[in-house]
Length: 368
Image (cartoon, rainbow, N blue to C red; front, side, top):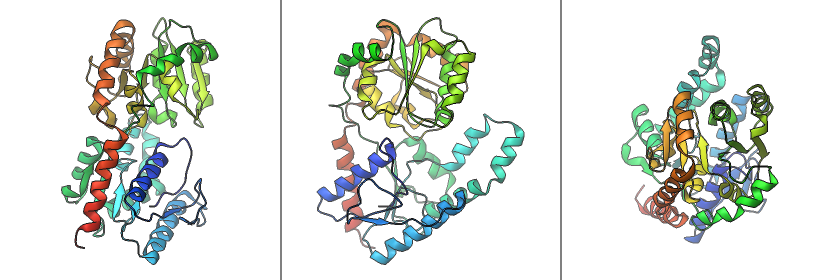
């Protein structure tokens, strides 16, 4: 398994660990190829080429990692990076061309020219095409229909290689019983016990829509935003909340090793992301009994039914976001939260494990 770097709060890394466990439970030996990992055991091959530029960081790691994998003659090589020559690729980052299209909607014409001419983005687009159209690729694990359909549309790839396997959620850990933390978390972060609390969970504030949430909150007469995560642009978001006159209604709490109590303290999750294949926070929130407001370019939107367990709107449709936040409160939010829990209950970690195990058995047993 190839993953360039690890962060304890990264959803992608949790998935790598989960997939590694699935294979080990089947009796297979699993080696990680990475620059840096939590565990420096003998099942890790450190691959840390120089990274003087962004392009060289990606391209050199790709070359060194796939070379290391071939030298070891593994039965399967699963990459979580865009590395041509892998036998399995997990498309956890979605399709880069789609992200660039959405990003272009939020910037001026001069910046769009820079985006198109960027050597880094040109490299990623080439690597992605080479990956999907490489003869050694045997399966692509997609975590949403949005990504599955996008890959099929954009690349010359056999659709049978595109395997839809949703992320699983620990429905015992993320559960409506987390409401027991409501009073304590609200007291800790100076949130009124009876006020609506709009939760945001994630890193990458610009892409995932923290400022869009703040602008919408500014049009509501009540309610608080609880922002869980970190980002280099956090200071800008803090300044925006001051400019909007809502700084007293916004709490930036940073990265939390245990995020579950914050779902218990909130009334709903708001994630107006510009582009996201399928964030774990949506599954976690719904399993915790929270309605979800998200965008049309989020893979998790397929789990959300307007008015039933949340709302879906275009990430840049400000009036629609404001209206959805108004409508997802009080008694209505409670019923929506119950519907949300019911919607994700089948998508357990065990269900994901079983699908992955079946895929690995198929690939290891089929003639090559």
